[in-house]
Image (tube, rainbow, N blue to C red):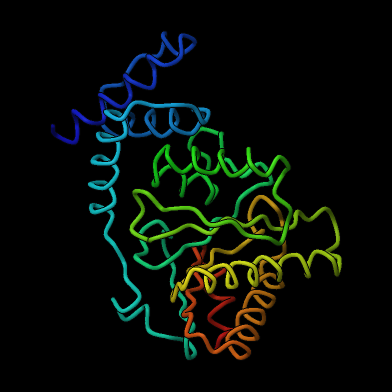
Length: 260
């Protein structure tokens, strides 16, 4: 099965699941097809799916992952440490071959349901595949309550090049940043590190938690992130290496300045 055939199969399967989507026409252009597939995956609720779909989806997503290019901790010059055990890398977090990447989740912890939304939650779930939402759903069903801010959960990574995903809910800022907000954000980083250590993980990549849709000021968030990680590494000496993964130029400049 070619990649184009896989793409078409996945689209048709997801459309066939829901009678409300029956009127959707599959576009001719490949880029439009890819966008449609991602949209259909984004809106799909966590429900049972066929093993055939998963087999074809996994083959498709893994080939897409290889095409994007996988980046490892010991790879290019841009991944050289800024400080002992601390790296700074700008790019797509779903390309990182590392023990765990951190997802800035929401309290429902089921991923982003907005088609092709630009948040990291959407990007991670889209690249991992529908299994990630299914696992998150099982966790939340057992928990029977929304995920509180400042904590962390661990899942498999499925079709991502990393081994695991750490999901954490950051504080949402309305107006002025309060002391409690800072404590919760610090808790996100600390909880992820503690959970990584509990599973004997040795490398973790943090996104810029809460700075996007949750409106935490970028500079203050970076200061908290760096201090929390440094304090943890100094206290525990357990060899966990940390990548601060940024996407925007603004965040890269902030982290570069603060780490130097």
